[in-house]
Image (cartoon, rainbow, N blue to C red; front, side, top):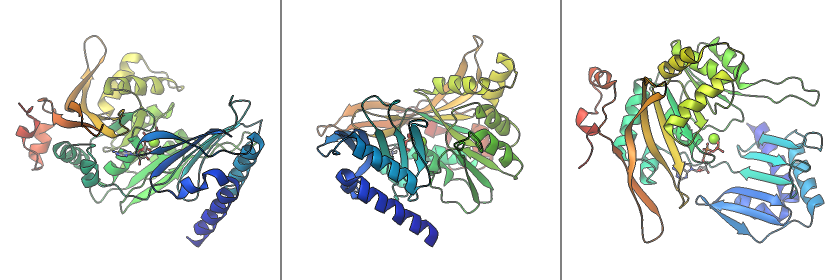
Length: 371
Ligand SMILES: Nc1ncnc2c1ncn2[C@@H]1O[C@H](COP(=O)(O)OP(=O)(O)OP(=O)(O)O)[C@@H](O)[C@H]1O
Ligand SMILES: [Mg+2]
């Protein structure tokens, strides 16, 4: 623990000395992200909205030196030969940089700050991100061990929701979490965290999500959580979900629940596994039970926009994805905020019998569409 605190101090010193102009935003609790596009162009995100700030670096060399030295403080390097870097900082923040020649305007850097706020379902409801009934329904799905894909665009709140769902896993399971850069915050008694490793300067030593998924299957997992499914590891996750690892979850980049299915299928196909399109679709549909779509709205808020059930494939080969809850009646308040209600669509989940058999307090009437 002290060791990590030392590392945090080294990193903070590196930031303080090198990121002079923007240091204050790191300490500013209202700022969630710092985006440096070049020495003279800096934005910050506050309450989900971007704003340009007046600070700047003396010149490109100063900014580049700052990025080098922050990278060094976490034992990494960035250079013209390897002009990009993604790293998790010792305090849990995420750091991503791309430097010229790959970045045209100058060195680009983003720091997504680690927020220590442990968001609960209660907070999530209060924030207006979900309705109480929809949150209860998700709780029911977590209890029943449904396999869930959280879908959304960049920065839409996928990881936040995935973490929230993980902390609702009923007691008594062994959970294995696999991420590119460890960021999920999970309150659970039995959880193992794995993190990928990039190849070293000689291109050796890479440990991918796929590798870690394979290892995790030999480590007696009950539920497997993949922070972000972005490549051919999708097929391993689908197989795991279909072979007894109920209650597994992951996130995927997509703009709506139907696209999420198509994306997962495309990712699964991108590996070496030779499998017919029809067979793959069958596997994907039997693996995924639910898709939760999160969206970032124009007022900066992030909300759940759909909770959909995957029922299979339609005769034309497309996925049969049915919304159970959906955001309705989006209205702008006089203060410019967008408000909407996540309401039942009237579709009853195909696993209603399981809800009844387990005596879960979620009556059929809750799925009735409000008049
Ligand atoms: N419902 C919410 N209300 C307000 N802020 C939220 C909500 N959900 C997430 N956030 C904030 O939005 C930011 C992005 O969230 P998160 O990291 O979960 O998104 P993401 O979709 O996983 O992003 P990425 O695409 O970069 O992986 C974080 O600062 C997080 O605290
Ligand atoms: Mg994320």
